Amino acid sequence: MSRPERMQGGAAVQSALPRKKGFLDELKRNKILFVMLIPTFVYFLLNSYMPMVGIYFAFTRYNFRDGLFGSPFVGLENFKFLYKSGKLFSLTANTIGYNVAFILIANILQVAMAIILSRLSSKLFKRITQSIIFLPYFVSYVILNVIVYNIFNYEVGFLNGLLTRFGMEPYNAYGEPGIWRYLMVIFYVWKNLGYGMVVYLATITGISNDLYEAAEIDGANVIQQIRYITIPLLFPTFVILLMFALGRIMRGQFDLFYQVIGNNGVLYEVTDILDTFVFRTLKQDFDVGMSTSAGLFQSIVGFFIITTVNALIKRKDEAYALF
Image 1 (cartoon, rainbow, N blue to C red):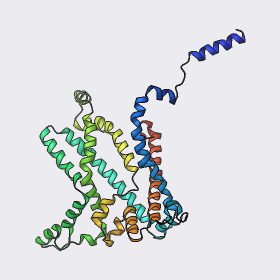
Image 2 (image 1 turned 90 degrees about the vertical axis):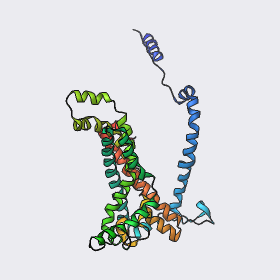
Image 3 (image 1 turned 135 degrees about the vertical axis):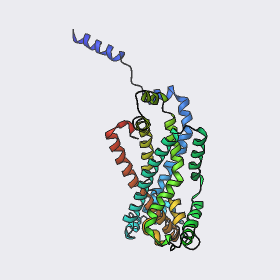
Image 4 (image 1 turned 90 degrees about the horizontal axis):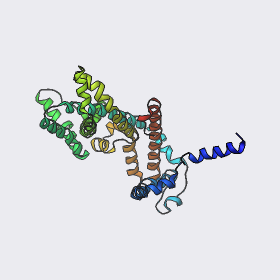
């Protein structure tokens, strides 16, 4: 075959191949869908991307007279207040430690409760139980503080009233920091158990009954059905919720800690997190630059954690990774 013939043959093959469609082709085909996405783009632009300009607060000594870009630029000076306070390590450890406990314990119990409820045969009992477990989610942290105070108050609390009735010495819970590491986890799990359980219960409801019937025919008992069918099919949901939670691992449960602990300095050693420390500092000095620098520090550490965990998950199974 001569060279002109080969060139003509190659051109014919290239013309026969489908042309790779670009963004403009996609826009023409789905222009209605793109128009429907405009409100979403505007929402995230106004509420997520434009506020990122405020990061510049962290590098200025802000004052209202000069505004954001007119205030003196101080570089990394605002980041030193956390380091100089001598609490950076303890605050970071408390924030991450509590969130890890919240994520792991809450998710494990939520999965367990969802599996148990899915196995109940009585629909009426299942609905009543689900409603009772879900009810604490609607209790505000202010009400939770009232409940905790009325239980653990030294003078008139329910706990000490019960102890003295049985001839025992009253217990000063608000003067014993160690116990609050466990109490804060219990309070969080009690309040959020029902909400997460509903998410997992919805996933279990979507599992085909044919799988359980086939397993039952093969002789699998209830435990084996849960182990080899329910849990593996719940795992993708667990990973997604875990990744979402890890994205906020440096953002402590401010409402929980601030309402329950309040201004009790005795408990700060074991219950103080970055959010409450920054709030108290901002309330005293109203230094916007310092509070923004702390928030930026939390975001950077949280971004590093979630990208690392996502990379590890992606290496094991790419289907479970977020990006």
